[in-house]
Image (cartoon, rainbow, N blue to C red; front, side, top):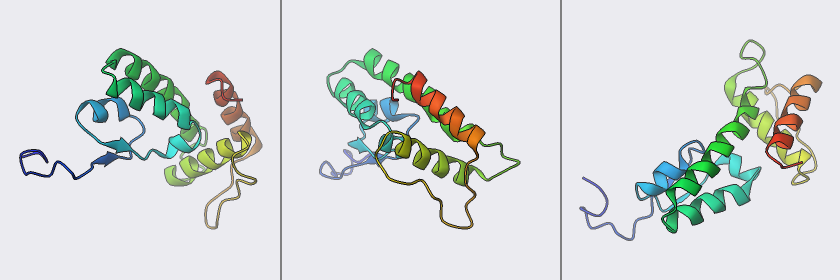
Length: 131
């Protein structure tokens, strides 16, 4: 039973999954809190606006672009660091490259990204038109 059937119309449901925002909005989510939104907030606003306007195709295209951008979280091999460290490090590095934060230092025991990984992130930001 959903929130409407339970009389919870005022209860807002948000998704944090940056990879399915268009689908979650189409299913009735009230909003999103995606980590990748720190790197490209305008893209998530666009998905929200397209979804609310009923333009599922435009929302899907914007979502697909973000799916490609999300691959910044895969630049560090799992044999070198955990997925959480890789994603957080990539997000912080990308935010620094975009000028949103001053440093991308990770707190211990997180490992820092290396020069090769940082270059890959910069390339992916360039492909997304963000640097």
